[in-house]
Amino acid sequence: MDKDRRAQSKQRLRKVLDDRPRRIQMLLERGLIKNASEIPADAIPIDPELSTKATLCIPAVCYQDIEFVCSDCGRPDFWSAGSQQHYFEISKASPYQQPKRCYDCRQKKLAKRLQARADSGYTPS
Image 1 (cartoon, helix red, strand yellow):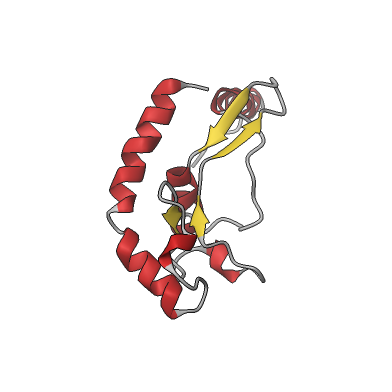
Image 2 (cartoon, one colour; image 1 turned 30 degrees about the horizontal axis):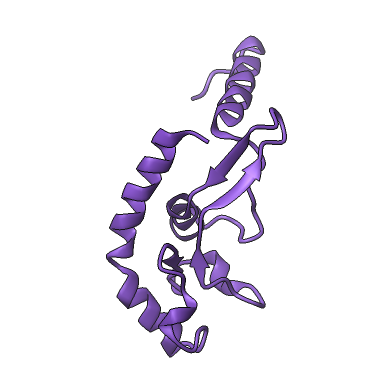
């Protein structure tokens, strides 16, 4: 795994963890957890007012780094807790989404798609 990406992820995580007490209090008030020790120290508690993960039948209560293997190149990679927090709380993505491609393969796929558009004569307006 890319050590620089992991280091950047940890920096973002520290920033988000500053909001940890408020998030834990909200989870306690809504009965999603019984006590704060249910949230691992290195995890980001969800914000039930923002996260699409809070709408599941069995809602997620925190984001943690998820390791996976890229479906294109087979390289191990991870989806950082901070990226998940942005994806589910800011972008409002489907709570059922999981990563399947590493960053490099996602960039290659995007480049191919953009090149195919350019080759077809597509011009954004």
